[in-house]
Amino acid sequence: MKIMLSRTLVMLLGVAGAASASEDYLNVIRQVQFPTGVQWDATVADAGQQLSALAIDPGGARFELWTLKGSPLQSRLLDSQYIGAFVPMATVAVRSEDPYELIPRTRADRPFYVDITVSGLKDVGSPVEAATKVKFLRHLQSYGRGGTGTDIDRSMATLLRQTEITQNGSLTLSFALTAVPGVDLSKVTGEERFSIFSLADYQAPENQLASRFIQIWPVADGSISGISQGQVLRFAVPQLTLTLNDLYPESTTYAQVYKGDPRLGQVGTVVPGSAITRHESTPLNRVLLVKDYQSVFDSEGRWTMEIVTRTPFGIDRLAYVSFDVQKTLSVRGMVSTVE
Image (tube, rainbow, N blue to C red; front, side, top):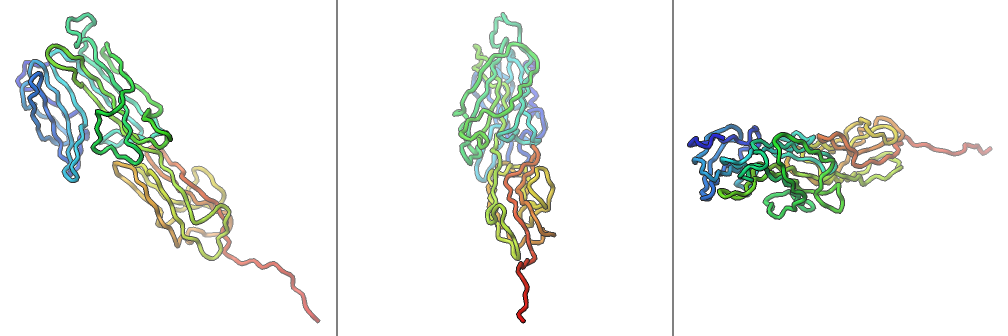
């Protein structure tokens, strides 16, 4: 490590898009010196590199990347790295099936992956123990039902696992499902945080070398009311109420109809006024009223209406109902004459 340089090159997490690129946000790198505790803040762009504001003291320095929003006032620590003379280097990356760039996220029923890289560890038996190992921690924190994680106290997160890493190299951990607790596991909302910490030594306290978290959002559900299973529609269609809960931040949700009984994966005709497309950061609940949709039925017989949602994880059916369309009037009787 080039600790003798008067300034140390600071990479903004090594990836573009780690900080918020929105005009509503201000990105700041905070440098904290050890053991003095002197602090310096520098405003930075959402991607790039620049030299540190202060020379690195013998105890090292911690660099924190913060993103700040003015209205309403919010702050979020995106990542931090510690640099010192005898401190190992580490990176943590979290991946899921959702390619969202700003903050890793996934759905409660989907897998995710954590990539860990550690370098600079000395052989066990080195006189400086802090140079021979690092600690790996996994924390869980629930947002609560309907929560979004805004301004939560991350010091209240639950430590699920702590292990030591004593060898340099890379490792990928796979998680089939989140461990964020909840009564209904399909509806849990929260985050998991994966961190690597250095050990304390005579010059500096224990410090975070790298940390990333992934947000967990609930599985959507929905219902159709105003029409019942097996109902016969004749000359007018009823007004429908579509109730949509926990729509994923990146999703397109709509009602569709097709001829026949329910069939998973069937592509139908979208019901006018039923579609919602989202490119957001948090889930959404919505109630839609749908009427005057008779144009979607081009023939009589059995029809099925479904609510489907398209997300980075595929297409899921949230609700369905089957009914009969009968537009003609049938009269059954007997014809006779009276002489």
